[in-house]
Image (cartoon, rainbow, N blue to C red; front, top):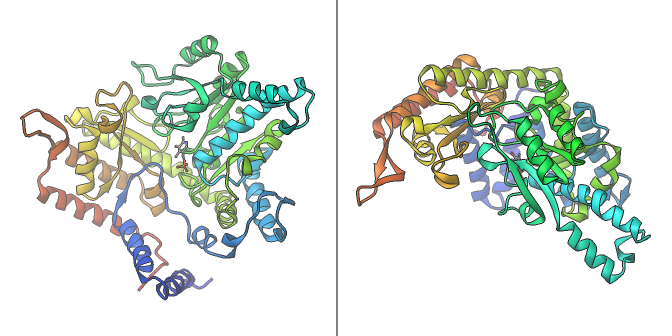
Length: 478
Ligand SMILES: *Cc1c(COP(=O)(O)O)cnc(C)c1O
């Protein structure tokens, strides 16, 4: 392939778009420029390959393909079948799963598919058997009423939000919390780690139908073998949401007890975080849940997005190549180098370090809220997000933490030396920022004071750091 094929592809695409609505073409170009300039430490973001991005902009977008491969409700799906089958095959091979469902449009949607597959298998199917009915339409009004109540009366046990769990694991603002009666397990206040004995104790008392593991802000590994034993001991279905760390599973950094696939009944993930694919989700499971999972559309999903499934096939093929394992290892090496660099300079980290792709800085050590720290860093060209820490004194809005992750910068090519420089920049900004005051003199959780000259200087240093690692070096929009 000629070196400029990527430039040609993106330039031509923008030229075509510009002919219709130039402001969209401009915004796309501006987005690339912004991404090139920012030191992106958002732990849930990455940079998909040009092949993955290009696989999304085509005629597959025009197809309706409800159903599954070879069993569609619409004619003319043979090419969609090809890409959906390929994406599923790559997912099965990559993760060693017996079944993969690649239609979910996002991580939340993948979780909804999993929840309803579990409810259908564990609640609806037995009710149908009891009523000797083959289909819900065959139930009497009374049986249907009773089944709907039973579906709405199930229990879920997941990780608490302030320990790093996710809203979709049974929390009230999300539909999962309205569907399930939920309890959560936190982390040991002394170590910051998951306390498996405590999880087992809560499970024995609460007897959940579903035990969920997985997180978006926990900087350590979870032992899925132990979690499965806990689930088995109370008859729960064990589900793992690996949305954040799927890339570390794919890259064989998380193996044995830390690989969810051999231990969980069902695994969900996004495809766009550490896995570095298109924005989307997928579900992995064994043969027991496969048929229920395949009913995801139209159960809870709108029509599949064939163009995104094509891009999933491309990205999953990339993740099966040996260099993806090198990437995954580097992601963790970089997170550890970043953690060490911060610790050495006096930062306080939740759990004192990391085993994965993310670091959670407790910014109360700098006398700041997460909100103040996030904004001060942003002023200085460093893109992060604020995040609650365990038993957060500032609540879920202002928070006391800053979450930083290395998947994106690692894709760009930055290594451990650059992570030390990044730690220096972060520490400098946070140690030079002070909390602001409200007009009445009380301490503000949002206002902060940072010398604009220092913010500018750090922005320039961040830019210099990135200058050595061009993003999409083969894409020149001119
Ligand atoms: C990001 C995330 C999700 C949601 O993914 P979307 O694609 O934004 O819907 C679900 N679960 C976990 C653990 C996540 O980190």
